[in-house]
Amino acid sequence: MATPLEYSSIETIEDSVSCLRGAFISGKSRLVTWRKYYIQRLYDLVKENEDRFYDALAKDMKKPRLEAFIGDISPVLEECVYYLDNIDNLMKDKKVKARSRVTNATATNVIRKDALGLVLIFGAWNFPLQLTLIPLVGAIAAGNTVIIKPSEISAYTSALLTELFPLYMDSNMYRIVNGGVDESTALLTHHFDHIFYTGSTRVGKIVMTAAAKHLTPVTLELGGKCPAIVTEDVDIDTVAQRIAFGKFYNGGQACVAADYVLIHESQLDAFIASFGRTIKKWFGDNPQNSQDFARMISDTHFDHVARLVNSRESGDIVIGGGMDRDEKYIAPTLITNLDYSESVLMGDEIFGPVLPVLTFKKIRDAVNYVNKKHAPLALYIFSKNQKAIDRILTTTQSGGVLINDTLMHQAEYALPFGGIGHSGMGNYHGAKSFDTFTHERSIMVKKQRLESLMGVRYPPYTAKNLSLLRRLLSTHPWIYYYKIHKTGSRVSLILAIILIVFLRQRW
Image (cartoon, rainbow, N blue to C red; front, side, top):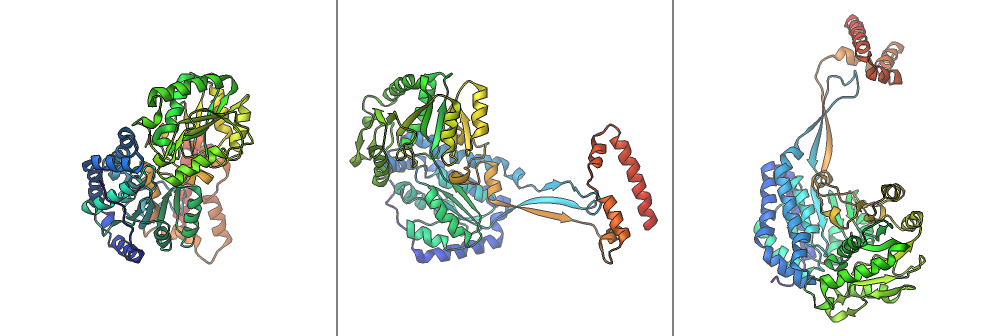
């Protein structure tokens, strides 16, 4: 088992920043062979120490082995394999056809994906490997040098990662800085070329404010209250199971967990009954004795959820409600009969195994309720009615949407993952991570010829030159008519011949 986490000295942070910035300038991190080698080394770090990570994750929050595999181990390994298979294509320059018909007609246009430089990544405690190492894979693949700051809250997993990291990775290119608020604050005083943060909206604002002082771009993966809207035409047993999975996975401590349910009033009783059966089937009569139910990560997080439940202004606990602070245990809990005006339980993100349920009569009532809150990171829709689905999609905003399930869109790495508004900015996963950690550098190459043609742009400016440029650079819609018309190619040929004759006379 890993030793307790030892914080980095604040005095060493400046040295780390300076060292890694100098390392980036050397250019080694941008070599494709270098990128592939250290992505493979990161794969080896996780794969060869899989059992030790299971132990650390269990000690941090009693995370079940299966959940640790699908939530922390497998995603990192999959992302490494993706980049090893695709990095050559992702790095290729993209040729772009010139839009200017004359002045840049002889130019070659290329978009190159350049590394940004020195990147800072703040990991999160709820999935301490996935949310720290997947951004790292993308940053390495993009050719950057990187400092990662794992969460001090998941102390055993972060300590193990810190122990193993220098054994597999080049410490002149990639480093870990450990610590709490003081160490994070010290890091943010330095200039980075990109900051990637996963965590709360409150801290996200602090990170963004600090980054703004250096005009550093940020990716913020935050959270919010993710709703699950359930219409009347559903298989209620399937819906209950899938929402329960999205709520109780990792003890409800996931940024895309279903934070509350809006269900058609005709389905409420059936949902409560099926939800109760699901909990008993999965966790037994006493979930506290189940090996498959995680604990709250800390006393602070336990107290947050307990306060929301105990201080609520309305609602009845119809399932669960038990709490044991010594074990950081909160039972799978369902609360109904909530008022739409409820501000405590429906204010802050719950981030625990407590699910409030509200009812609606009309789709517009559910949509209006969702829209009164900040745009969530995820929106879940359970329905067989495509018109209802389309209406919800076109009248709401969210980082992502999953229809007829929960959580699984976040595990599909072909899709970009990210929030909007208070749930975040920017996205990553797969190819999108490469985009996040690179700069699209526009490059134009021109020949040293046709200077007589280019002469129309030079002083002294004359009416004749202006008239010629108006003809050559015209963007009147009739040009597009001829491009798409049946006779467009013939007309274009005639115009080209006239232009050539005219230009030859000037030469």
